[in-house]
Figure 1 (cartoon, rainbow, N blue to C red):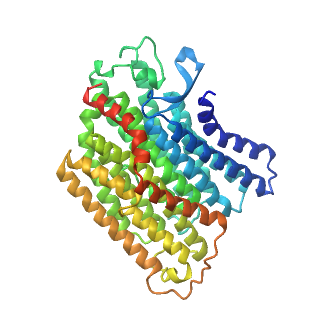
Figure 2 (spheres, helix red, strand yellow):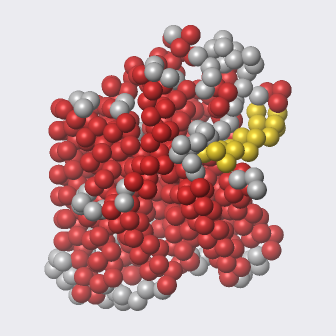
Figure 3 (tube, rainbow, N blue to C red):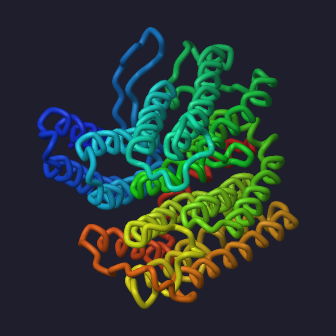
Length: 508
């Protein structure tokens, strides 16, 4: 059997589910929409495990490929496939898509429309990680981004009203998010067209958007092109990944987003930015990467320290986790800047680990808000006695986030900072200061929320539906599994990471 069918099914199952809901779901009956989304999530999860476990790290670089001409005269085709890097992202997407569907069962208003938009986001994310055509990457990028505006603007929470007469908090946050993501998308689009038009000068027989063909181009023949284009692409993908100072859409977006949307936003959409840096900026412009990445290491450390400091000063649980994401994505940038296999393995592991951990924390934060109607940690307190399940799971998620040995966050940070030690020790020391701040804001949040003075006005019930307990337990199991057995990830991705590093160093 052609293995490409599994990758196609992984991509199109959420689109098929969205279409079924659109056509057959009665507007006043949410059961069909939930069932269709759940089936799609389970199928996508099973397919992601199959694809990940059947990827051969010693085989050809891209596997499970499907290739069909779409507009051959313009060099555009439907071309999908995975290497060891995207295989890890496929597994992460499969896990979080199912968790997000289960977290969405609490949605009561306009359920049909909600799941259609959510499934479109899931399809866009999946397509972004597996497409091997630059034109279709833009299509999937927009498919993942635009529905976010509606999900936050229609199903988000206002909390404190925005200080603008023309918009509520959720409307303003949704607009800010989409404007930033579209700005990044515009830079990506322009950069991709530059690569397309210069592909012939770089040695290809015809212009193309095909990534595999563009890998054969020698853009270093045009010396100024990589020097100019790489930082543009880095900033473009950095906007999506929460790069300081283009990160401000992220905390606002999270504060207003529904729980499942926050899980996908931090869990996989941020990773689209980091993945794009590796796949399109570093692989296609290795000479530009070699020149600019050492400078961007400084920006990475700023991300780590600034995000951690801002998280320490917040009182809203979602803002704490959002700024934590800014800090932890800085670890990804720092790992990439090292240009060595240890740092890059840590960066990819951090992308996967942070996706799991931050989705877990946002899910717990959403449940706390639903049961107490507040996210202000100063108004919370003593919840460990009232909500023991959430207390235990939040503590475990927090420990994973601060890098407790035996959990996935420790492996990611250890590998990244070991790589940084061989790259620039001063930056390693500064980055480690961010980990101290991380421990500080995580432990303070745990103390204030669960072990602080009891607030007698809060009487939440610790009753959880099955769809709330299963994904939380599963995500915790993932942090433990990959923390104890990190080779599951590193053995799959190592050869692909080495091939990119060799490109940048001019070895291959």
